[in-house]
Image 1: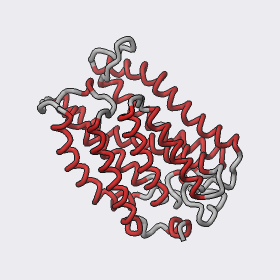
Image 2: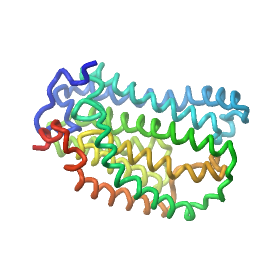
Image 3: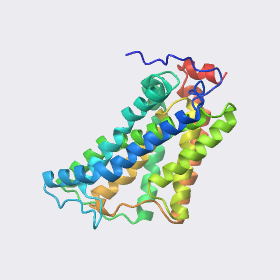
Image 4: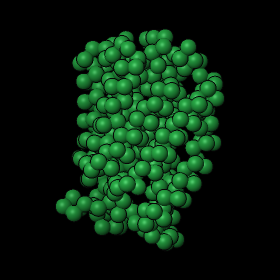
Length: 301
C-alpha cells in the first residue's frame, strides 16, 4: 500500500496544517463528529456487552451497569475496543480529506519506530522514577503476587499501549488536524486545535472537577506540542502508554483494579509539572529524535 498522501504537504504547514488544502467547514465537522461518535459508541455501547461477555467467559462477576466498577473483562475489552480508533481515524481522514492512512501517523507518511525508540531512552527511566515516587502518595496497597494478578499485568502491558495509541490517533491525530485545517495561520491553527482537542480529551475521560480537568488539559496540551514539534504521534503515544501502564501495574499487582479512578486533588500538580518538564526536554531533543525525517525538516525549514 502506498502510504504517501496524493496531495503534497504545504511547505511550513507542520503536522497540524497538513490537511489545510481542504479547509471546508463540513470536512472539519464530519471528521470530528465521526471520530467522537465512534468513541462514544465504543464506550457507551460496545464496551458494556463485550466486557460482560469477557467477564462471564473468564469466570468473574460480570460488569453491572447499575453498580459500575472496573471489572477485568470490561477493562480489557475497553482497551482493545478503543484501539480500534487507530484504523477508524485513518479511515475517516481518508474518506473526508483524501489523505492516505499512513500520513496520520507522521509527516513522513508512516509510523516512525526509530523516533519512538530514541524517545524511550529518556522517557522510560523518568517514568519509572516518577511511578516509584507516586505510588506511596496514591496509597496503593501491598503487592499480592498471585497468578491472576501476574496475568493481568501481562494483559495491561499488551493492551494499554494499544488503547493509548487509539486515543492519540483520535485526539492528536484526526481531531487536531481537522481543526487545524480550518485556519491558514499556523500559530492560530495550532492554538485552536490544541485547545479543542485537549478539552475534548478531558471531557471524554469524565473529568468534572477542576483538578481532573487541569490534569487532562495539561496532558493534552503537552501531547499536542510534541506532536507538532516532532511531526508525528510517536512521542505522545509513547508517553501516554508508558504513563498509563506504569501507573496501573502496581494497582493491578495490589489487586485494586476495581478502585481505579480519574486523577484528582492537588497531587495532580506532580504529573503536570513532570509532563511540562519532559515536554521541554523532548523539544530540545527533537533534532536528534527526528534526524532521519526529511518531511519534518522541510516543514520546519
